[in-house]
Length: 130
Image (cartoon, rainbow, N blue to C red; front, side, top):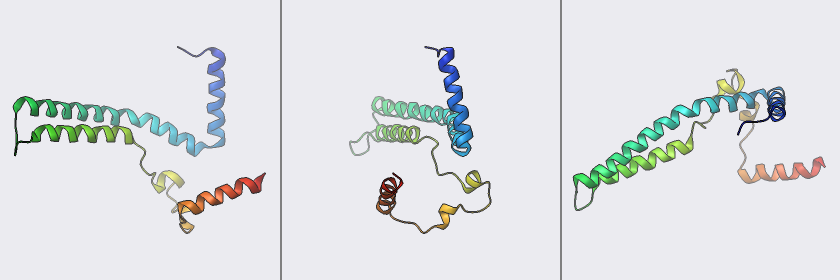
């Protein structure tokens, strides 16, 4: 169902506001939306290959020690393809994409803290800002 003209204008306004407020986040979202299609196609092709191995192992009857090894390999290929598709292209961004290659960010220079300490700080900041 297509968007109405009013909904399309509102969506364009939200998109423009996002680009104005946080251009780094907007470019990251735009890059990940464009690059995910190729990975999905590769994962689908790999899944189909694993399915063919799974069925082929059953049909061929290749057994090692009474176990259908070709079918096991097919299942593992299918499982790996599924994980690869779910993982997507969300790897860690490189420093060049984050700050233009000028070195480390300010966050990288601070000493690392545990997850619970960071969450506690966030919780405390919420109450001190109100």
